[in-house]
Image 1 (tube, rainbow, N blue to C red):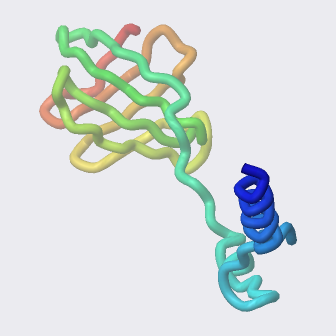
Image 2 (image 1 turned 180 degrees about the vertical axis):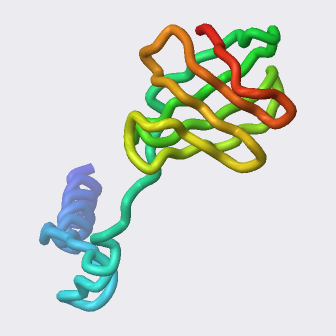
Length: 127
């Protein structure tokens, strides 16, 4: 029994002796490779959705607007399953326009906005 305990202790000591307790740092790429950091320095992420509101227009149409965090763009959807169309303004607070006659004049905090979509003239819509 004593021989087994001694053998077990020696095997355990040999196994632990094989462990290297040095810190391990994994570095991708050659040392001093800062080219990725420099190349991506000017990257700007797209704006996120700041708020989403649904509006009922004068002609009884339902329009949903995703107001973006840059205050210069929005995504407009007509109806429940409409595809989003992006409208943009040159600067924050100005009317936003998009392709095919889309336009939005207003802000996410206003209770009503003026919206134009293809086939409809600009009309007042309430949140």
